[in-house]
Image (cartoon, rainbow over all chains, first blue to last red):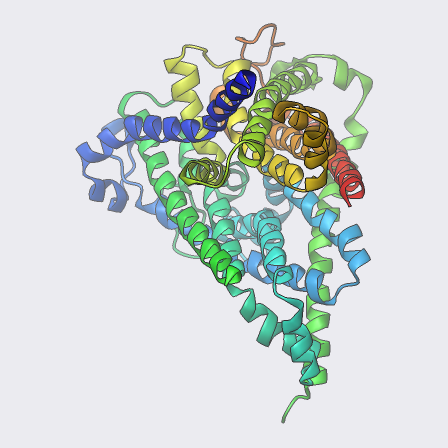
Length: 286
Length: 278
């Protein structure tokens, strides 16, 4: 019994390592980034669009706008395609085809390294946009498409789970009332699974905001504010990854401050997603 | 004009099929494109020699060794911690504030972008703990990153083990620890393996966090404190700096094949697990 107690304590310590890692991470990122933000003024740091590290000017407004624009575009694409796949998988597709072919393919899509996405984007998509739509090709549009494909598996798997969790009786009841399968899907199933789909979209947004390597390769990364779908853009993540290797002093701290901003955005998105899915779990329990 | 419901149904289903087929087509296109462009540049020499003139010539042996080192070490650290956490959550405690906190930590970690892990690793492991840009710093950073995946899949696998198994083990006079190690973990093993395999895949793909923690030295890593350039980082540098397109395609096809094999392995072990518990 003594051994049992000992094992329990050891396992508890092990189990706490994840939370401790999270706490340590938060502490270090804020410790490195927050003092500079406060010194410059949080509002100035966030709303200024002057980023000249050698002159000590740090404003990340264009990158915030860039991250948001690219994420919004990505969500349009992953919502159309990701939710489409989820609906087909759960409602209309023969189960063997769904679990044997489509689902593994979508999981594989999640496994492809982000650098490969960026590379295919820059060798195929970017020249295509440059030749047929104009602009430099490296653009908000290209980043949105690449990111949209990348977060599609997240959106698909979570919304498919939500659709599968809708009780069978809902579907059967609606069919029995004479509705077609599609009417049943969009009037009953989608409505019942709505909170799960919202959670899927928000988690997908978190993925898109945080993605780094693929975006660096297709976005162009200028310092200016993007003004159209075809203009190049720099995101918060690419700002950090591009300059971290040679930054020192205040410049380095400013990159950590960029990280703090990103961290806060992600935490807000995650909290919303957690709250939405928890509310759903509670409702399902009733 | 009123469109009949049956017609809308047909249109909707056709649209959904189009969208899904397009998605799968994108996947197949990416794989086929990389393999078709990369395969002609693969050779035995590519796998067995070091890069020359910044990667324009030669092979990727040090990158393959570096990737194996970093990935192996990361998973060797994360797997026991993740499985231990899952065992604690499922077998050693009831739902409480504490388990909610542990789950909250794992959920949050799962959502944090890799570049933030990279920033943390670069200030904590590289500078504060003095490990420098090294295999060890990279592996520790990756270990925290893949921890949530291992915790979640192990927890699900352990929960899927039927209650009866545990009751029988107790009934035979076994202790809790014997029940966990000899009955529960053994039955849950293929499910746990799926999570571990997926983490290996994620580690191999990772780039942003490793650039900031493991560095990008071209040489062969000879100890845990040497800097190592993994294959993904090498591929990124080759294509981004336009050093050599043939070598970039070749490195990418090695990455793609590795990812395909890993996903296949995960799929296979998941099926084995499902067959075992049901």
